[in-house]
Amino acid sequence: MRTHSATLVEQSELVSHELIRVAVLWLEQWYEGLDDASRLFLGEHNTEKMFEVLEPLHKMIKKGPETMREASFHNAFSRELEDAYEWVINYRRTKDITNLNQAWDVYYNVFRRISRQLPQLQSLELSFVSPKLEEAYDLELAAPGTYEAGKPIVRIMKFDPTFTVISSKQRPRKLVCKGSDGKDYQYVLKGHEDIRQDNLVMQLFGLVNTLLLNDTECFKRHLDIQQFPAIPLSPKVGLLGWVPNSDTFHVLIREYRESRKILLNIEHRIMLQMAPDYDSLTILQKVEVFTGALDNTRGQDLYKVLWLKSKSSEAWLDRRTTYTRSLAVMSMAGYILGLGDRHPSNLMLDRFTGKVVHIDFGDCFEAAILREKYPEKVPFRLTRMLNYAMEVSGIEGSFRITCEHVMRVLRANKESLMAILEAFAYDPLINWGFDFPPKVLAEATGIKIQQHNTSELLKKGEIDEEEAQRQYKQNALEVRNARAALVLKRITDKLTGNDIKRLKGLDIPTQVDKLIQQATSVENLCQHYIGWCSFW
Image 1: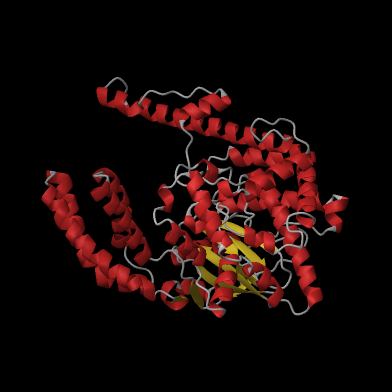
Image 2: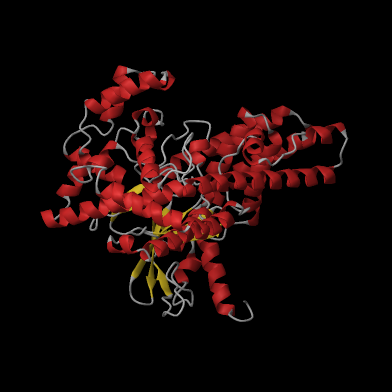
């Protein structure tokens, strides 16, 4: 490629490298690194892992700063960090723990100073954090996510000189680049997240949209899933297209409640008044407390938001229909994919059309259902607020009919879906975020996974280092294949109506009915963690 399009490759390397630099600054890298290292040292007493975390950070400092922001960090902290590293090296040489304690006195001091500076990080001027990106002008590179074969290329003209830092836990950046067509293209630059998974999910949604488009019933209802660009830049950094004119459900409900002086967490407060030790209750007691909180609140917020934000009753009717249908489409597609973690900040509502847009596809293949702590119990989000915001008859009517049509299309095209999902499930680059116990894998798939402890055999001297590495790799491969086989079996069951326990070969209306029952069951909803906001 470099011999064919030297400038293009050079520019893409520059933009990619600089965006990775801006995504997580030195300040943030050290904050997270010291946080992880202290947990490994103080919590797990694992000094080797601690060295693995700290070493690359010290190498980065040694290499020297390239931007003004890095230079200011270097001036403020490099001397102390070098002193601390001296103590660490002394410990490695002498194994005297007092050296490590000395090092951690210094590290802790640096960590405290960094944590005071982080909240001030509200916007980033490119001249300080990446002058190369600020100077980049009239590039050959296409604006991310705009390239379509056979159509004119929209090139990047320049980047907006200020990136905004969004005040959430991971501090993603909002950036704007000017396209050669004169339009502004907005993106979210995310560090600490693997965007490759979002990218694969978008490919799946592209296929689902094609299938829906080719079906008469779905076409006349304008059913589709809203996609947005997802461009991985590295295993931990990526660009996501900004979803325009949309607010998360959490923001909509918060604004509505603030304007009416209603407490944002009123339902949670009622639950805590009834049972301060909610998490330790039995399911029956949880149901009682949960229904008590629902009975004492109305849950009409989203319904009111849709009505109040519509310019006329006609527009409201259109938006309500679009809302109901888009919720149904994504409920079915998300169920097949095993998409979890659908809390109110991961669902967005388009201000103009009323369409529901899902974001953050980190939990796929039922990762949320299979996790140990607070496993999810529902196939998709269908809480009372979402229900009340639908038509007069709620779930009955447009929602159920749309679900049945979408499920019919997905089941009729299961070979195409399985082809793309198979590639997805066996992809070695995907971070699953969970592990099945080997026993569960063996029972479900019939694939035997070796149980002997490689590190124990290595310690005893029964195998050498090379053999140990080979066994580790072999074991990881077996686990990955068994896990993929199990996940694909679940998806095949869903696409053939064999996914509900004790029921086989369900027809489409019955399958959809069972799923809606599961999603609205109070017994299931009351077991979720509080942040999922089951009471909304």
